Length: 181
View (cartoon, rainbow, N blue to C red):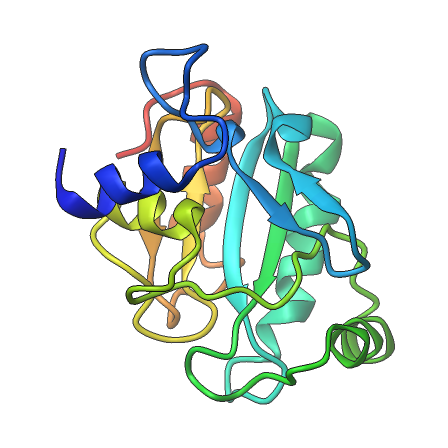
């Protein structure tokens, strides 16, 4: 286990005591509207965790992320948006982020509060994802597809559109319980 993954484990309030292999479902984020966004509530679903930003050239990907969420939600899939200002293209105000997402894109998928996704202060979930799937986000709208069991992770760079065939096929595979390759 590398140092990033070890830090993610130690920083997690749960310390993964119940299961020998940590999963994405062992983490909790702050919700955009306040309170906790417990990934345990998504146990058994495939997740697409995406670091988002409101003022980025890739911001139009929100529309396709919403369509993906709607298309596959009934089959056990969820998009999870995680606004981040790590690349200086996001508001510092959660209420403004919510208003932007609602007004511009009609976002109904769950959204975390403003979160660090890379570097020393990265949220433990993102350190864990980075350790399993090729590193931290290099830009906004980096995507991590998490398997239904919460242990498999596959990364897709910013330039991969949410409805790109390679990503849709990977979501289909995750929903079928296949390993993420």
